[in-house]
Image 1 (tube, rainbow over the protein chains, first blue to last red):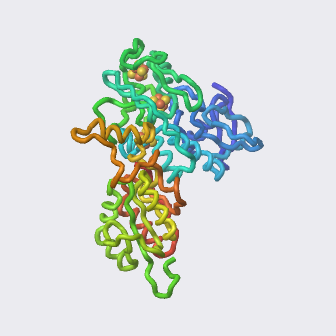
Image 2: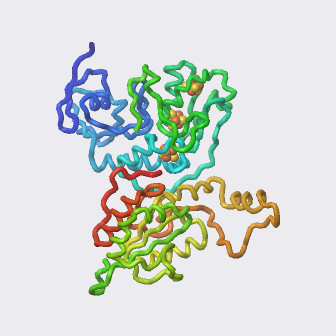
Image 3: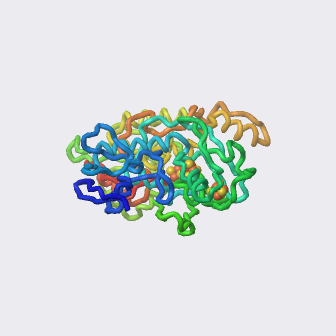
Length: 234
Length: 182
Ligand code: SF4
Ligand code: SF4
Ligand code: SF4
């Protein structure tokens, strides 16, 4: 049993064990911090930056999913500054690829769409990139549409950490980064993929989906993955 | 707004650029509330009005659709000049949505597909009557300032009614509850 730490989150006194993250301490106490790449049951990597919070005495924002609690820490999870950053982060996810919610399989159940709604994002100010990216439909049962991938890496982690297959990786850097299967070969010819479908179930967007589904049709079936604690979907 | 000349009723207009008309359909879905809106304002231009030229001195204009052609661009610039409060109505106007799906491959590829590859007689990209496509299909605010954004494909009739009635009364549009893209 690790030691107890006490801290203050949004004015509430909170107790947590020393190995807990600020995000998990906040959620345990009913304080909502938005996330996209985090999924309870998988490792945390601080990729999406939506869970940024303010720490008293630090000019820098920190990702609460990869920040351990400390004694006497004073955390702010909601402020105009944080909201502005979170809106910008979500805007950049939309503009980095080609998101057309109206014709997307995930319309109505997508966590990115839900994040935009929750943050009151009603238009984009930055210029869209409109990249020409691939759709890989070579797998017998599933499709990867890079137009909708936000590189959260949930699929990479569930495949490596839970299924133990490690089919997915992210190749390249910045705007050129791409999700690849088996070091950049078609998913359908993968020798590691067991077709378990876990990646499809954890994808927060419409980037990974089952064949035969059309607009707004898929419903995530996380309850079939009991080793993941978090079954919610926006 | 609309109170510039004593007794004058606010002037409302709608315009349809590169969209599917679904936002106008949603507008009609206001049903009997349309009568309420028309009791308060004059509808001076739009797909439902037989006026050829976009008039001067419009108080509120609802724009459906993205800006995709030279013709769309000419229209939206004139509309902006003649409108006090410009509303981007629906995802095509707000993000370019479905019309914008051509942006990654370019206008040329779309024209070739439609007029050359799929043509059975006279394969030819038109250079008359059909307005020339812009290189990219973009949201309205990429070209002219927009005052109010209403997301949705299409936005609900309730949301349109809420926005239009506030603007006609000279109030700012209330933040949309559960307003989202798609
Ligand atoms: S993945 Fe989500 S945000 Fe992207 S188009 Fe689909 S519903 Fe919209
Ligand atoms: S289906 Fe299973 S094994 Fe195949 S890539 Fe997805 S998570 Fe990995
Ligand atoms: S495919 Fe889905 S789960 Fe995988 S990185 Fe992209 S958005 Fe995340």
